Length: 315
Ligand code: MN
Ligand code: MN
Image (cartoon, rainbow, N blue to C red; front, top):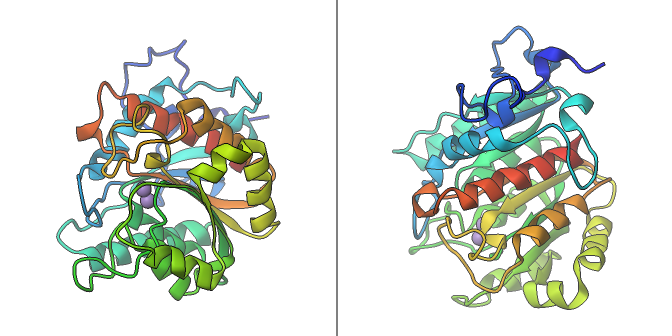
C-alpha cells in the first residue's frame, strides 16, 4: 500500500489555487526531516541562473514551477502510471545558491547532490539555467561516468565564452566530459538547431563520440525511431536525463532565455519522455524556464507537465 504521508494533496480536498505550493503538492521533506530516509524520488528547486549568457530569469523558475505544479493529478492519462503510489516522492526544497559567486554556487550544488546520492534518493530538479546540470553530475557521477539523454536546441558543449569563461550555460557538458562525469559514447543530444557561432561544439562531439540528432533528422525519422536509437546508445547503465525547455518550439515555450524556432510541439515534448520507459534513470532535470519571459504561465505549465512525465519514467 502507498503511504498516505507521501501522497499529494488532492484538488478534491483543497482547491488547487489554495495552500502553500510544494512540487506537485507533495510533502516538504528536507534532509533533517524524520522521514527523509524513506524518500525514493526527491524533487528539488535550483533557483540559480548565473550561467546565463542572454535573457536571464531561470532563477525564478522553481517558484513558478511549484505554483503551476499544483495542477498535476495522480494518474498519467496516457500511460496509466500513478507515480506517487509507485515510489515515495517528496519536495526536498531548494538548493541555496550564492548569486554573487559562480564557483561557490557550484560547490554548494555539488555538496547538496552528494548528500542526495548518498541517501539513495533519485533527484528530479527544476532549474535554474543549464549550468546547474554540471554540479548535479559532479554529485551523482562521483564514482563512475554516466550516460545522458539530453533534449535541447543547443549542445551546451562549447569550450568557453567571453574570452575564456569556462562556466556558463553553454559549456556544462564540455566540462562534464572533461571531468569524467559523462561517458561521451553513451551521450545523445536531441533537437539541436538554429544558427551557430561556429562548429566548435559539434567538432568536439564528433571527436569524443557524442551522438547529435539534429531537429532535421528528428522530424525526418520520427520520434519512435529516434528514441529507440537513444535507448540503445545509453543501454542499461546509469543514465541522466537533461531537458532544456528550449528543446520545444517557442510558440509553445516562449518563456526561456535562448529560444530557437522550428522545434517540437507540446505533444511531441511529452511523447519523447514517454519513450524513456525502461531506461535506467538515476536523475533528471528540467531547466531554462524563465518566468519573466513567460506569458500566462504557459511555459512553466509545459515544464511541470514534462517533469511529471519524467517522474513517471523514473518510478
Ligand atoms: Mn541547454
Ligand atoms: Mn538550449
